[in-house]
Image (cartoon, rainbow, N blue to C red; front, side, top):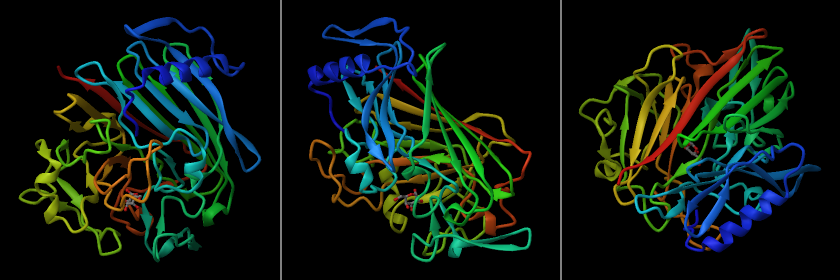
Length: 386
Ligand code: GLA
């Protein structure tokens, strides 16, 4: 995350990106002026970003008519930056990310990445389905986390772009039968769209040829102040959930759906994140059971930062939200401009089904059957109050 005081370098990057377009990218870009010193193009552009597993990696820049920019790479489907204006018109990046591929290959903790085949933990790295026991990689103590040793965050996706109404990047990946221990060939397709209403919309689609658990999400870490020198403890958060799933010491849900009322987990009205975090061992890293019913998309959370005036609303079709306060960040990892990324300097709002659902018959099912279509939608909508 980098404060963009140097607008010249930004402009150069955009020019570079624009001149690197290929047939995949749409060149029907309109010119739009975002402030007096900087001219950006709406639409989507692409630059080379290196290679991994013998495949080309690119960085795509989506720009809307408000001058908001989202950069995404097809390595891990990672959102590397989300640059928007604050209440003074100053632009900065509100997500943790790097400006080159190399740091991502060192496996930072899922910065901005697409997570699959199963977001969050599966207890003891195993589950039983249709009478068969499936063993997964234990990559988080004895548990399985975020799809295993080489989850969807560490593979190179096939990409295509379109800029018809809004800029969209579509990423495709075939997760083969047996990959990371999961059954079935799973064809995954994720579409990122940046709208002119400052919405980053993520649509997840998947189909399988054998029953398998699927739980896809995005692991962006937000700090609405746009500067990792500030923690997120002064941000306020509302989560539309009357219950959450308490966890054991290895962060596996106990199976209980516990009321938040009267606890540090009550975000049904907007609360300062830092006001009660000290009462939660390790910090927040839990799944909230959203009040919404059914598969309709609804607003389920609002995050605000009074210093920048930025507000982020989260809409989803999913039944759960993992709110994680960057508890394992410890300053070891540095931003591209050398600032340590310390504990609580960013937070995740991961829309999802509940952790360990394959082993919890009482939780909503995450099993996708052949012939069924997995389809979920999440929208992160940014606005600013003056
Ligand atoms: C999720 C988990 C956390 C942690 C982070 C990545 O949010 O719930 O416990 O593993 O991912 O560090």
